[in-house]
Length: 149
Image (cartoon, rainbow, N blue to C red; front, top):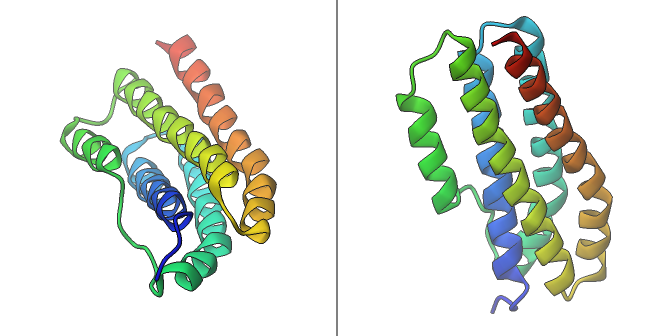
């Protein structure tokens, strides 16, 4: 039977799945090669974070998590519907990605606080600076895009 700390860990893995998917979609939708490269790197950082956490979730629940958050599904729908190819679109896309990163960081904090597993707490605390760096990179790209408008 899964323990109570499996719920926030499951939500965190879902948020990481959101980030992976969004960065991969964003990489295909932007014109700037430097943005594309950044999004590919950011997707990879989420893949790595998920790879560290997924085994603990499997131990707690008996299965891997491949789903997404409800908010992530809404962002995904927006990204898919939004027209691409202009700076305003790129800026809006970056704002969406920043929100995904903020949610992921919040979930990391909650999961670390609620986890009964010392290794999960340690892994998450080690991942937080990497995800904070992802968020800062998105904010920097937003600034570049805003200045170009």
